[in-house]
Image (cartoon, rainbow, N blue to C red):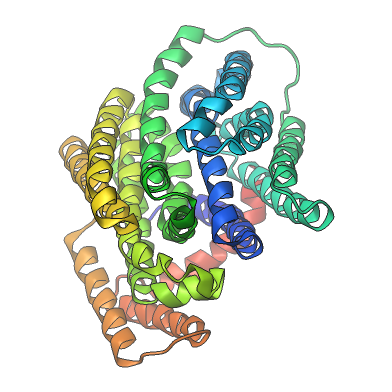
Amino acid sequence: MNLGFKRSVIYLVMAWGVWIITGYLINVGLGRYLGPQMYGIYGLVMSILLWLEIFIITGVPYAVQKFVASDEENAYSILRTAGFIQCIVIGLLFVLSFFTAPLLAKLFNNDRLILYFRVAFINILFYGIFYLYVSFQNGLRHFGRQALLLITYSFSKLAFIFICILLFRSLISIFLAISAASIAGSVVGYFFIENKKKCSFYDQKQLIRFAFPALIFSLAINLILYVDFWTVTFYLGKDVSGFFFAAANIARVPYFFVLVPTAVVLPTVSNQLASHSLKEVKSTIQSACRILLLFSVLAGILITVYSKDIIQILYSSLFESASAILSILIWGVIFLAFLFLLTTVINADHRPFVSASIVTGAIVVDVLLNIILVPKYGAVGGAVATTIATGIGFLISFLWVLNRFRVFIQTGTLLRVAIAGIFVWISSKVFVVHGLNVLFMIFIHFIIYGVILVITKEISMDDILKLFRGVENIETVATD
């Protein structure tokens, strides 16, 4: 595996690790504090907000990542043009979402949601600017700075939310705290811009032509994260939605993890394709897929086996009903993680319409299955629907990438990871534990998994030593 790619992934792993950990601290804390019903309302408002924010964090910022990576000489012209377009999109989206809040509240039969929606939507005004700065640093491959921006936002969000809980004890204050975190991240992002002089405008049409299909792609792939939750809320109400939201937050661990390699894959593959380095492109794709496979197999098995205990440890026994949902949904999210990674490769190959078509097809299947299965089988039906839909999307994207680049994970790697996974599953059935003892067993399973991969030479001691050397050199990456 390319050492530069490793170092970039290591550094972003730290940033996304902070992002994920703080996100889970927020969700677990709010779940315990609010209880299933109010936590379900919080989850509904946040899911709508996060999906709307796809308009401002993927279309234009995604184009910035792509074009800055392949045309660094015009980086600041691209940023200026993208910033102009982004401000227009942000303004229109905020106005539209603000005035459609009553319709959203009516859809879910709860007028209290109007105020919650409108206060939460304030974040649109600031988060879009913050994420534009994140994407710009990513396009320049300044992964250290990108990581610092993500860490700033993560800690600010955690601190502001829990301060507001202590002082005001209301959902309104929580939504305002999220906007405050976006402002803090935007301020840091502005100071990272080295050239603050006015530059000439870049070709707006070129950015928009790439941004639009990329936006459709992102809206669809993120809709998969929420369509089951919205369907469950619509048919089964807030009493069940809190359980599903808790399960979904835990199940999304592999999806959040895939943000690390994909954050490196898009600019790296774009740059390599521009340089006609097909051999390096294949190496990058194979490395990213291997990293995700090594992590997701272990995560999937452990979360499935210990779903009930994990739910109780994190959210308390009040959320025990979420365990059945979690044990199924985790595999749907793993399929989604691979789907996202592979379609990112397709986007880097400048074929956003292909990736958008694959993901749109998956979402159509997901919606239809949810409508059929949720009324009949309840919340578990929503988890099954998502797993089937993402599995189909993964298979199609895998075949496309395999045909285009003639590369995927080596058969030997698949076999060795399968052996390690089987050993972990068997050991979990032989040594049965419950409660907090599960945390110790998860650590033991992690060691077993790693040792088997070393014995089978899937991971060598040289890889481990290089990993630590990469961590020691992180400061160099941060100043790139």
